[in-house]
Length: 269
Image (cartoon, rainbow, N blue to C red; front, side):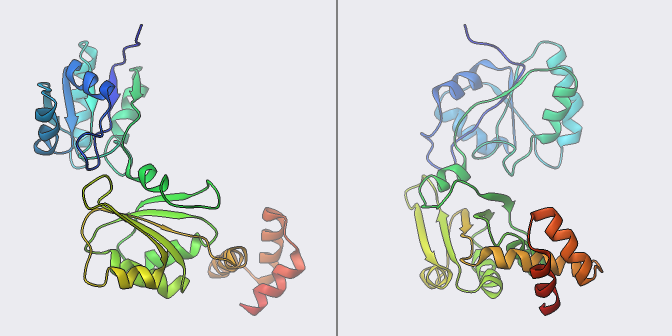
């Protein structure tokens, strides 16, 4: 027996239209309607798989407005599926607001496994460990980008970016992190899929004439990541007005580090 839910979060292909599960097709056919970011985009998938369920728009600009409608429909016994334009809903896509409200009101929610650009990308690039930090779409401003990449010196830092901005983003990263190693993926699962892995200058040179397709990128940790991360923490506390002595006490207590070494490093910065 298969358990039924009130609300289904259903991944859709990130590129190749064949990358959808049999269960996803079954659910999309069985629910009463499908909530989607752009009905025109979703309709292409529905037509391809002869799914005749009605779709209704649900995007970041009308999330609040749709909550009452969804609650009313579910109370009447309807079943709803949520999809995004591509990939898994709520991974940089709408869905958080309605899901929170449904759970508050006692409705059952489930998510189907399926396509996601982050996992598709990470599953084909080498990493020394499984840990990574995913920050969604990287900020637009140069200052915010610099703060972000400084903060995560010691992490595999994964982010999305647009083809129009990625080369500028990489230049900003290079100005902060120097000749850091990165991996960049574009057009994942599509005909012109490309994964490049190497030093940031190599990647910039490879794409110097431009780049197309949605972008997933990872910055590898620096070789001296622990020292850089400590420097970042010290600078952050300095910016908040803490004295060198206070900084040494705070960081040694929180991270079990040598207080005298932190104090000496703080004075030097």
